[in-house]
Image (cartoon, rainbow, N blue to C red; front, side, top):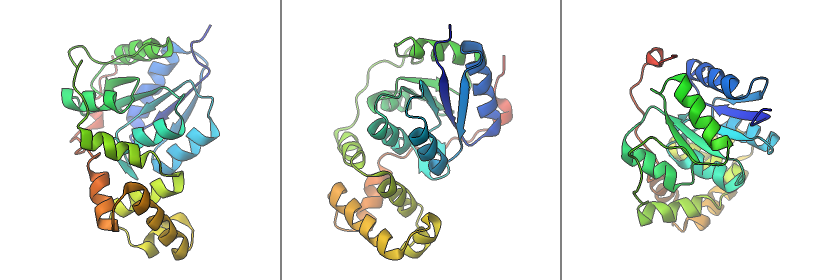
Length: 224
């Protein structure tokens, strides 16, 4: 009997998604696998599959950077166990992921058999983090901004991420296929929820959750 019926893989690297698929197939043969490669598709698949058993989430995808994606999922799909899969393997990164509610953390350097072991542990209701990464606590400022960002609606969250990329209202409106007036309304709501006075301050607050993307060649992924 499979531990899961449906698992979501969210990563913008096709090679890593394939490695994760291999791990899923080891743990759950025949399990349905749904993929996402950016923020838009992540929002779409988590909304469309609220009954998924597990989400494997990269920290860096187009449209989202650092822990904001994890915070978004935890606030809108609280019952979906989410395991961060990242090339950033520093202990402080892993501890921050734990603090933001991740059910586990899998380094991308891990072989498929270890990825499968971690997945099985989480699907059995436990948590899985690399040995030696226990302890640590979120900085109070980071915890506070995470709580405020968790209050954003999906559309407001996407607007904030686009603001963080430096886009103007007109560009955001085009990207989201909405009017500029709608974008302005979202920005106003974002500033109110984040308790800031302007869009620059909103971007600076969101930046507290970012993590510098790793320099990584996907071809180095161990498939053993």
